[in-house]
Image: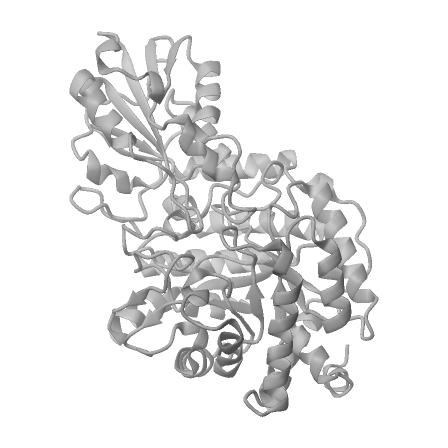
Length: 552
């Protein structure tokens, strides 16, 4: 592809189309075809709703690239997915790994490299060519509701090393890394899917903490950087990063030297839609330096009947802005040049891919993700020396999560964890295979007075990072504290989640943390409890009010 001649041959409409990464519901493929045929849309955001299986992913990606092949210029598409461990696509089949916080707990960047290599091989096998990750955010705020386990940890040096390794793992194996959420989503309480957060760190703190991982990811060769919808008062008190030429131009382009594609986070998130007119926001974003505007169809704000009309209206509004001078032709040429260069350098084509779906969730990949999950496990506390447990001894296993809480996991329209089987169920099944005298108690049936007077008590807690929604953990601390009061030092808590919950039961003597809710992490925890593998990980985050301090 000769970029200069291609741009010279493009109409304004075709150039603007290349600057959009649109999304669509699973049953709206015809609408996607129309947008690609009419506007030469440059890419698509693919969710688990679109691609629940590897076969579905291959069929969809081949169909979309065929649409692109049928356009006047035949430019291939960027097809991106949130395959980042904590969030996933092809969730029922893929080996997405335990997620970033677990990788951070391993303390070994090679774990990140190997896991993201698997992610690249599996997504590439079905035609997904952009991994919208890794998250390079330092999760320095324990109350962060949207990053959490999507982060490698809180210490910038550790997060930087892991980010660089993940970028290399992806790009050494044919995928494109999009490090996010620039310049850092780690010190927020608000979820930007719901509202517009503000970060009040000083410029020195931002450079010392948040920017380190992004600088490392850029040095490692990351070809894309995703913006955040957050106001950083020390940088630009008036505009979120996505709309700020100070943050995207002065900081990202000039100071950090990033020369790749800047992609926005979804412009359909409430942080943007509740505060800015969609057309004005798109024009501001492009003027600020965004090259590719992403419009993921957020699960809480989807109107199927208006989908096509809304997307057409937005693209046409940007075209009008070019025609009347509010968005310069030089700016769109610069953006399109970067997008086309990314596609050319990666050697992508619109040719149909052969069936390589057997790579997705292969035995080799499953073994690797389990190995990585085991390396992440941490015995955060074991004051009474209860771990490893005797599998022949009587054990009561208590689920601290009510079953109704898990219904939300598959109600996010494919954006987020998308895990149909709760982590507890995987853990319980694995423990049944290990332990001879295991009794399982559901949260709904729990009563502290019914506990046996002898034998170990194991309580399992879970948490899931959900976009614009919350996982109901309201009974977990209550059940754990009741168990501690009744069983004392016979209690072990297994956290199939981050360890921040320890702030709610700081006196617990035995706590094993997997830093993940994924099946591989639940299996690893069940292997470690009876001593079939060692738990050598260390928490990559601190828990205020406790003795847990971040490693790294």
